Length: 190
Image (cartoon, rainbow, N blue to C red; front, side, top):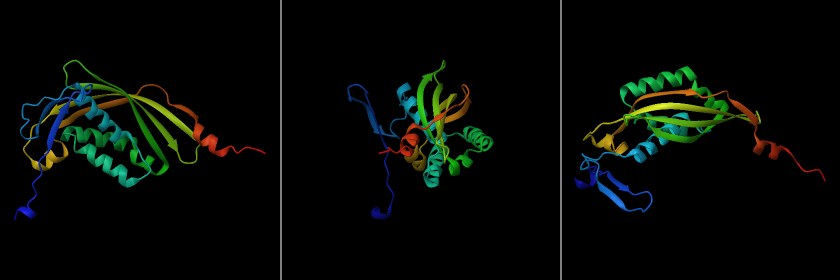
């Protein structure tokens, strides 16, 4: 019976970034009073933005990124993201371009539940030999929802969920030659 019974325990280990000293440790269930600090929220939001905005070459990887991201959304957050992805026709980029995301900053806003995120997206279109760099600013509102559901704890042990998300382009997109592509096409003349 024990061999076929799934028994997963998710542990949370919080460490000091500078010293590596363990601050807090326990199973996700036993840490009912645990409150994540801004560093934890910042990491969480950074990873979330990477997952929803990056477009890799591989469709399987892309779908896994989105599936992971949706597991960190409330129902309202999922509805907002779905509407936004459809409006942007993000899936279309999958077959024509790749998008790499660089997070520039994650800043807590007054009240402590919302964070302003600034990032840049570098889009490489197939065969274009150029890249487009587009800066964005967004606001993401996070809440912690406690649960005893083992499946949810295995995916999201801290119970952090994004309930609201909004973003816009900062300025016009800049298109520049892809230097890597230029170097590959130039051959020395002997």
